[in-house]
Length: 521
Image (cartoon, rainbow, N blue to C red; front, side, top):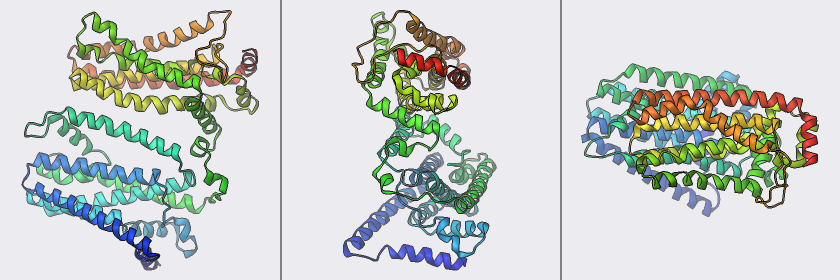
């Protein structure tokens, strides 16, 4: 039966060359492009045979890590169906364990894996020219290819379970944001390095870190042997990664075989926007509705557009006062993080009378609180991920990157946590749906100003330790920079979790008062 499945896999690959003439021409053209690209990549790798060991290590580890990450992301964001979906082989009579093993081996017979195998073999040949034992190169190839293949299998199964018939332009937009979060900071980092005939030490530090991560450990094994590094740690991480992915694949096969596939309909193919992307849960529905408001309602759009200008304006008085530009460069980003965390402090009031849907349907407070934060997280995290490295480059010291990251994380997440409480404890009247965002209703009390001020002040107060560590890092204390990073993440996420918890309880207990507020405003 295993041989039969493998023959079917080969037949599927050869079947792509059958069909109309146009289809065959397209397939052949794509195949030629792939072959040419593979040949170019292999040639470029083989030219590293006379390069220094540190250069070869940087290229192989960074390139291998990027390829491994690509094998994970492509199935999640691509729209192609899996020809090796375990549900297609449910009638073959194989046990779940046997089917998982057979499909894992059949997955090795694919064009991407064959291309990866060719590149990996060339990498092993290069390391052999550097005096690395052949066994180390072979082990790197085997573990690297298995990691990529199993990672693609697992991610394809997850996409089949949770994202089937839900690929849309909204999901493509999320993918673009993910690329921005990863590519832009890395590009800024590489562009800032000083390449003076040798690999920059910052890049070598990044390589050492990737060498002990699941995406780079397998590709670092020959380099660790050549450099005299901790090769057993890389081998252990790479082997553990393969074992964990194999267990996840076995679980995915079991889940696919015991889960009824949701039938597709024409309406689903037409697209439901964010509702088709979000999970089918109360929190997912609230997140989808919030995303529609945030990207379609003028009131939300204006609030979001004000943040970059407000953050930049804070730097103008400092420059006029004579503060050095390299210090001023660090100021706008924390202000932007603070404003982003402050944005949803009155989010519930923007719903107007539509809030009755949440209260009347008995939605749990946790679903309401988390769902409303999704748009801010979807916008804020990529924005800060791009802005923080850029500000660090303008400052001129990469040692400030951890400190700036910790400060922004604390202000942003703490603001979100406090906003989750404020929007249900002290909502205040805002412009109604369809009205001008600059038209504000008359208020008989100062509760709105108090709520706004308390959220901002509270985020600054709880972030005070992180701000102090950031100040010490600015004065040259590198240990304080690391403390600011982890302290900022811990404080920010801690306040976020506590704020969501408190806001959830208050939302469930104040449902009637919230309805009265919505009707009165």
